[in-house]
Image 1: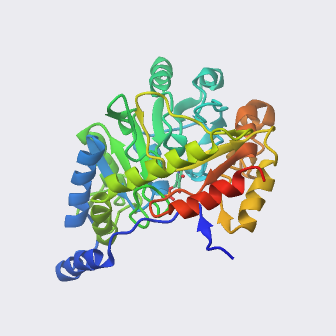
Image 2 (image 1 turned 30 degrees about the vertical axis):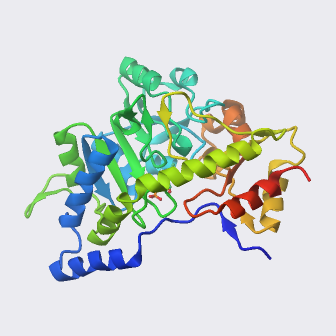
Image 3 (image 1 turned 90 degrees about the vertical axis):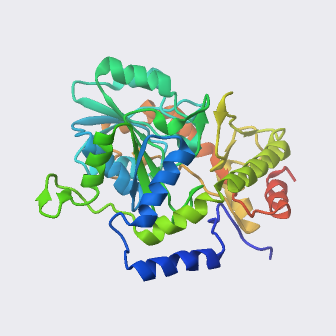
Length: 368
Ligand SMILES: Cc1ncc(COP(=O)(O)O)c(C=O)c1O
């Protein structure tokens, strides 16, 4: 049987480099609480990403939870059903009511044309997702938020390094939350971050992620423990030194998939708008009705050949038991998202996927 190919595989630096960083941590005995590696990684990421302020976190979910706390979000929040479940769980954990709005069939992100109809007097925020690192319509969402006095918190878990018109996508909205989970383009094993725009907001977030402490004896908020450890931060610095090469490798793989699959009847591959620098964090294809197999049959066919694609994002978040009874979770309200969830398949993409392995994936998809 051929070697197994998974949808992703984490990038790692040479172990010897990481051991040298670990030695420094062992020598300093500073393991967490904003040590040297943590400070250095925050600086390096601000510079690399082109953002003003970043607060590192122990994972993307705690970053999302904290972002909502930092902005005092209450009541209802408009969001997408087509995402990883952590997006909406972060609302529920804050006692907020998610209001699902359908997605745009091209961008696969919240459809700005449908947001306004979902706004009520209880709405306080919008939480869109830059799904697969593909930018939301940030201009239109910004206008709607401004006109209606709403905050915008982007779930930017997939959007590391993405740019629109030469600017970081992370600079849009009030806050953006990133994930540095092992499966992401940039990983620190586990990790995450919040991007903010003012020193005051960064400080508030930094207090919130450290139990609300402002000094040894003062607690000003009911904060949480969202701190990133020195081990994760040290790894992050090594990962950052390789990120450009990794992104190049991903682009090459994505380009090869496009040339191998774009003429296949019934396979739709979404494209990026002009002026967008993507990160090829995922390679979604949509298996349409005129393909010779349905999506699940293709998924099984790949699996039988030891190729593990993933149905991201299926089922929709709105179909999970804790959300399915919300009025906005109805199928009629979310028909575009439901269609995407029934057709999507994310193909293996990661630096280190060989051309021979990629050919196996392409050949397994082509009509036999
Ligand atoms: C869209 C989205 N939001 C949130 C998260 C949660 O991030 P984490 O796993 O770092 O908690 C993830 C990924 O895991 C994600 O894909």
